[in-house]
Length: 257
Image 1 (cartoon, rainbow, N blue to C red):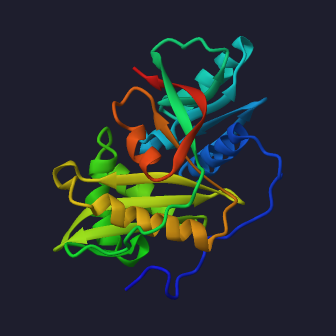
Image 2: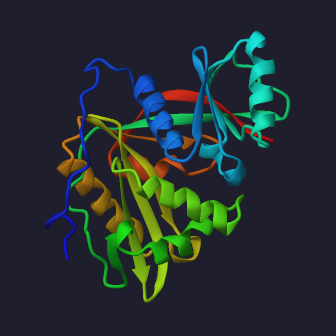
């Protein structure tokens, strides 16, 4: 059944028409992290912590500018939560703290909505992710390779509990093989997750999933569609360009070594 029949569009709320791509990215990260963790403010920065999801990056991370005078309080905050920051998004100054390494991202913006993408594949049953939490639980450990299955599954359920996330799942036989999600930040949609199991790539499954993802974006009437991809993974940006995304700017983050 085509995805655009009877499905509800993501909620769209007002935001500043002149928002820069970096501000849109920051908003996306804030929403994504707040779905799974508690936020604490440190001036222009924010910390996210959750003890039982200690291996989930978005549940244990930092966002924004941090001065040297703030570090003692931030370290104490993570120590009290019995966890540590796994990612530092949009840091300043650009000096890696001890135990973290710089990682550069490219923020891509969709320049032209692609046409002609399928929303079906003869090998697959593609459904809204909320239609089968059991299959979501099966695929999540592969999407969070550094975390336990229980943590990966809990993080996924937290994201799906938020109405600003729309996700789709592809099933081959009885096995989930692909997953994608879109996060609404207002008039901008972020392709937050796009995963196809390595052993089934090259069969057109990604194209079918992309057809569903872009249908979500069209129905939600987003003025901007964006995604952020790491520079240090060869070929990561190739699918983005293939589907009409163009590089918008570079972003810096730090990740736990």
